[in-house]
Image 1 (tube, rainbow, N blue to C red):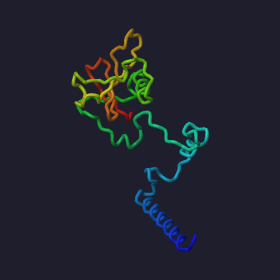
Image 2 (cartoon, rainbow, N blue to C red):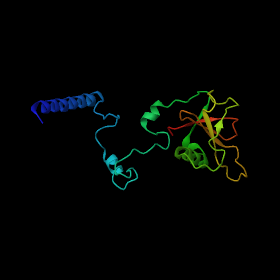
Image 3 (cartoon, rainbow, N blue to C red):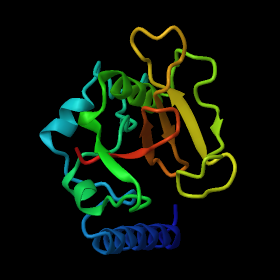
Length: 177
């Protein structure tokens, strides 16, 4: 390699280093994906070989969220989709409704064939949205010989609604509690 090629290579390496430094400063010390460059002890242990967070190749992958966040940020930013609807804390729902919310977060499998079908909001009790926005899921009713009257209805942006009386009334599930 001649000296001219070495010089060009050196200049390229220096420019790449400077670009990376500027990008790090613009991100406030975070990496290009917005994640902090420093690893916490819990993040390091979550990515250890053999852990659930490690992939087959041995590199860590971020776990997919299974439920609405319960972080302080979520507490400060959550607002109901419709102030006219009453809210209900997730923790106050019947155990079967919390089980259904868990199934929804995992993507199933669901106990009934009709779970996940489009809810058309014919009664107009939920905020008006386009067709296909809402989906309904059965909440098992102990002692009932059929699907019963309890449902969870989800919206396209993640909101969740509870009805115990087959769509006569709804409460929006508050993810903060």
